[in-house]
Length: 248
Image (cartoon, rainbow, N blue to C red):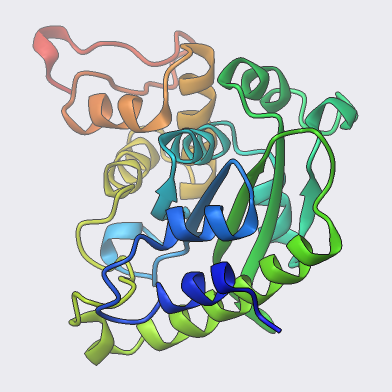
C-alpha cells in the first residue's frame, strides 16, 4: 500500500495541486534533497545540444549540485543519462577517486554526502534525470528505493504528457522547458565559441566547461561573459581573452 507521504508526492504532480513537488518528494522519500532536470526538445535555442535543464529542486543545495555536475561534465547524473540505468552512490566517501576525479573533491566542499540518480525516459527516449541527495549514513532501504522508482515512473509519464503542445500552455501543470531555457545562455555561448574557433558544437562546449573549471566559476557565469562579448575564445595559443573595449 502506498504511504500517505508518497500519495501526497504523487498528487503534487497533478495540474493545479498547488504543492511543491520537490519539497513534497524529499519529505516523502526521507532524503536531504530532490531535483529534476529535463532535456529540452531540439530548437534553435539549444544549438542541437542536449544540456539538462533544471526543472524544480529542493533545497537550493540540490540546484547547486546540478549546476556543478553540468559545469564539470561528470558525475552520477551524466552517467545515468548515458547508460539509462540508475546510479546509486548514497555514500560518496566510498566511491573510487578515479571515477569522478574532478567532481568528488568539489562535491565534498559543497556539502553533498551521497547521491542517487534515476534516468527518466521510455526505451531509448531520454527525458531527464531524477536526483536524490542522501545524508551519507547508508543506502536507500527497500521501501525508499521502491518509492523512488515509483516517483520516477510518475515523473516520466508526466513529462511525456508535457511534451504535447497543448499541455505546455497549461501553467498549472509540470512545465516543459521550451522558451526561456535556464541554460539558454550556455547554448548561445557554445554557438559563439564554435564560430570563433571553427570547431564543432560538442568541442565548443568542452572548451567552455574547461575554462569554467580552470577559473573556478560556474559555466553559466562564463557563458554570460561570452554572450555579452566580455570574453572571447581565440585559438592563438593564449586561450580565452577579454576583447579590447569589451567587444568581441
